Image (tube, rainbow, N blue to C red; front, side):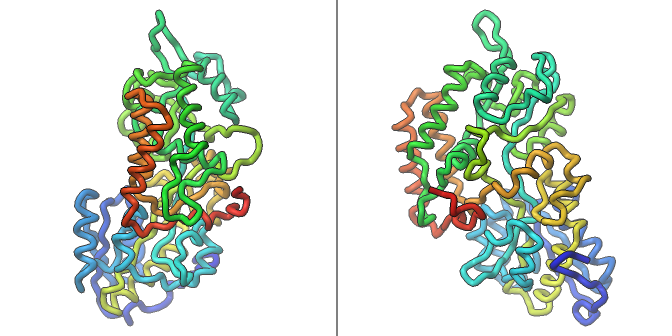
Length: 420
């Protein structure tokens, strides 16, 4: 099975001798697609037993590095790229040709080190889109023909979706209160060809004219165009779920939240607007769900089986289909990016036309989002002027990244040569 990366199950694993491995994850069956693949692998190779060990997210990033330092740590383990620096010293390089990975997985190249090797790649990716309440949309007399492509069009639609009573807002056309700013500002900056990091990739690039311009644009949405308000609740998710907000910007995880907490809300999804009809430098940032890591300190026998398992899942379309379903994210596997069943899902259909124009900055330090959120709060809630808020946030990012060995992957973006 497989396209460029092929897997032939007609071979012995571990010479047919019994072997026991462990797979560690913060997820479980139904939320981590690797579980289903373990079952399929064990059906083919009954001499192999892979024990799944669930560790809570809060404990995972303390317990996993400690386990990997020893000789008896898990042979295979779940990875989140935000903790790349913790696991990289212990993760083995994939025993798969890099060119084959690049051929089958559209984002594989951004995970290559200076030697052209990878320790994990993306199984699926996600980015931000606009979610809208279909009932409120229809009540405002809007149809599919009114879905905005530009921010100017978006403002007009948002105004139609905004309601007030005696000067008090009763329905927000657009709401980004809470955590939304820390994600949306990155996409807005990328649309205007502003990188998230410095040219050498080692320093945050937040305090600049573009960030200021976009912060003021978001201010105008509330203060000038009156489509929302900082006083209209402090959680855009809850406001949308309660039917009080008509549109929000959110990533794919929002669908899971709505299904679990607000199942009665009928919603639609459309791509985030851009500042003009021209193709931007990038539509937004993306992030990926990582494929598993292999423990480079385990025995040769365990590593060999782990590497075989990695090849099995990367060649197997079912792994990616499971990841799409469970993680509500877009396939990084090229052969499935135009799959009709996958594109029948609204969020996948919104991402597909733009997937080549999404950029990954790398496993960015958390300060890029947390300090950005603080800047937003200082401006919108505390009345601080934009220049001061951006300056303070930049200073905090610089402090937080001072001892970091992080280097941006923005230069690996396919259209980076368009950056001015």
